[in-house]
Image 1 (cartoon, rainbow, N blue to C red):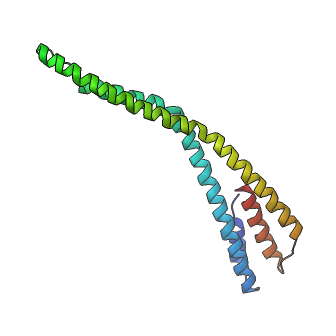
Image 2: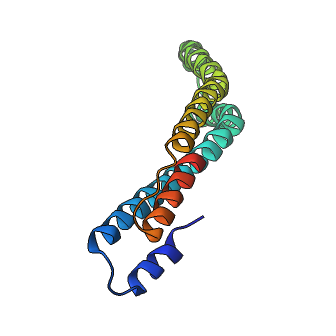
Image 3: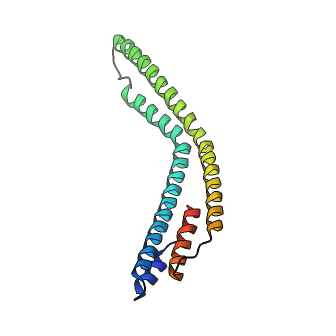
Length: 161
């Protein structure tokens, strides 16, 4: 849903009440903002879902490759070097395990986020229903047919967003 045809129609129309045209422009601008906000929210939702699905695997691969590259034992190293390397590896392993625990906690918080979003959506839907009731109860006509159309397009985009 876009306001582009309405913009074109408004630009082509000559004459008429300038105040009415300005009001129409304001309604169309607000409708365009609502449409853009809805598109942005849909993009963020999709991106968030993708991150939740891929994050654990990518993090595990990243840490394993770091550990593998950093701590390969060189052939012909002395026993002391091996022992020192073992101590360093254990220390790094503890550090990595702590980071993994932190990331798992963060992931758990993020897994609960969709439920919170659903709750926010329910509140928003209630607000929309209340707004619809107010809009229907007001049922005021604006002086211009074009103003009415622009206002209705704004209301529809507000409800859709």
